[in-house]
Length: 272
Image (cartoon, rainbow, N blue to C red; front, side, top):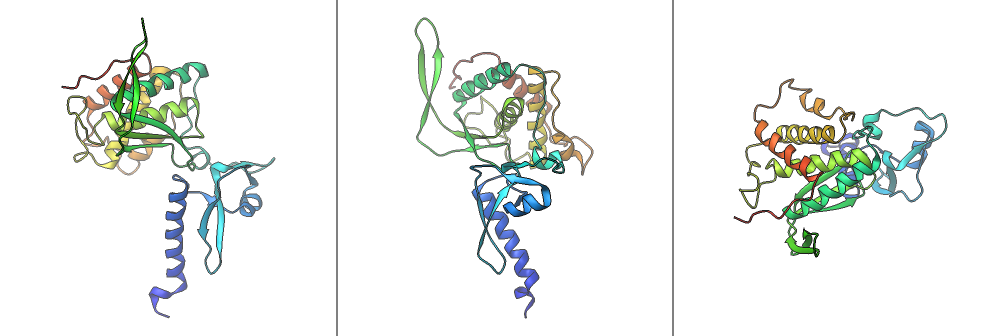
């Protein structure tokens, strides 16, 4: 048979298509398997209520698989590498209530910049994401608490989604990382007096390095004992130098803003 129709070519095409199917159904899912393989090969079982992901079975019907985030180990199961099961985990020592308050304040303050924060189901390899959104919706931003509470409607311009599975410092670190993409100008801007438009001059590696730098600063400001995951290291693995287009000024300004957002209620932005 012709090479394009060979079994190996067909298998590779199916794998690529299945990868796309998995991503569309549950972004961030990379380590998936059917229940029987999780049990027999890894000693893990699928959690009750987990989301099945449909893929094409080569030379067979549809198969349902589950991401590693939707499984749990049986007694005596071999441990999987943390970069597989929980690559974004942040461990610290501050009280959970302190972290929850920082998250609450940060989310509330982000509303003034048109950011709408929601949860989403994700696989183990995606903690969050942010992007422009085209909607006519607005959100209420509190402009005064005393003597009488007052709010103002702010247009929703950006959708920030966080993994529904993450809590505590892991969730806060992701929130800061995604906001850093916004405040470092990686998405562009609708008002250059608020933050610059750098989306056309910053490559992916530089953007990720800047965003994670801001996140690390914010997390360590909240909890100096926090142990961040080795995320920055992966962006330096191929080139052991700080990206040449990294802007220390933008990282510093974005980190300062994100830290303030976790500490106090901010006012509306100036519109000029």
